[in-house]
Amino acid sequence: MNQFLRALSGSQQVAALFFLVFGVLSLASAALLLVSLRERDDGDFKAAFGSDLNDLRLVLKNTWFMAATFWLGWVLGGWFAISLFGLVAFFALREFITLSPTHRGDHRSLILAFFVVLPVQFWMAGGRHFDLFTVFIPVYVFLALPLVGALADDPHRFLERNAKMQWGIMVCVYGTSHIPALVRLEIPGYADKSAFLVFFLVLVVQTCMLVQHLASRKLKRPPRAPHISQSFNWTSWAMGVAAGGLAGGLLAGITPFKPGQALAMALIACVAGTAGHLVMKALKRDRGITNWGSQGQSITGATGLLDRVDALCFAAPIFFHSVRWFFRL
Image 1 (cartoon, rainbow, N blue to C red):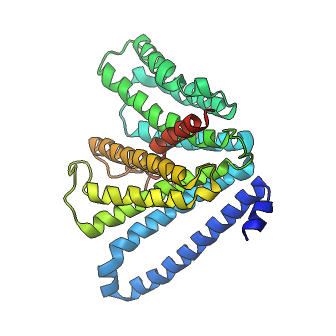
Image 2: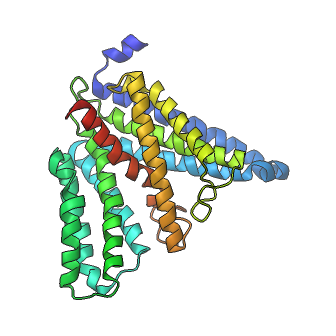
Image 3: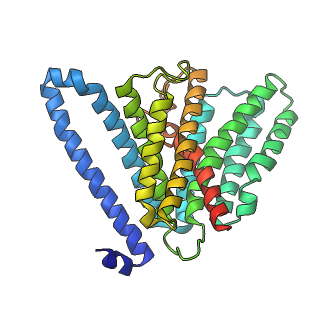
């Protein structure tokens, strides 16, 4: 079997990976459907496991969404894939801005963010202009946005309004742009296989988040930041990060890393992802909402698009720069 896989080209190996992923997701969906039928007919079963099943449905739904998005991006390839992730960033930023009140004086900044900053950032990712790509938003855009806001002649809550705008761009555009940038990395001896890095990142972060969530429900430990999250505690966090790291070590064969290196990279991604998820929860509490799709603003279902990618928005830049540093690209 290993010889057969090694005989395949890089693109064929990626195709085989997606075939396996969609097969596993289909089996999981079928199993959950069968369990749901029992839940509907058995009141005691629903009372005992209903909330857990709802959590599993949400995780499975989010996983289907991510797998389908990455598959479509891989199939389209090149600039079509870059544009697809650009659309994801566009809608994520729209959700963020919609739930962050703006003034008339912010209109120019919004136009700059959506129609200049976002396309330029993704153009640099697609063109492999990584030196400028990494500093364009945190340096140049962060200096330009307040200037545009000041020229609008609206000083009311100026600092707060610009900080919200900058933070939204940083998370939704800068963070998301590093996902397709991973595919554009040219790692020696790893030609046509960079899509595996995206799969690796998504799987380890999703594994970490799922285990952390399930552990917090079962262990019932006191929350570390109860006003931000009732489910975050150090024990469940450590279990989630350990599970994500173990998954990364087991996936070393599809990466350019050795098992120990893959474990370390997975731990880095998991720590960044869980930290980002907690920060985004704090932002939601500040806005008085439970998810970014509240108030009918969701474009992907009961939860918002940003709820589905918040951990990746933090993990992707850290993972991307760790890979670049490791291979001195």
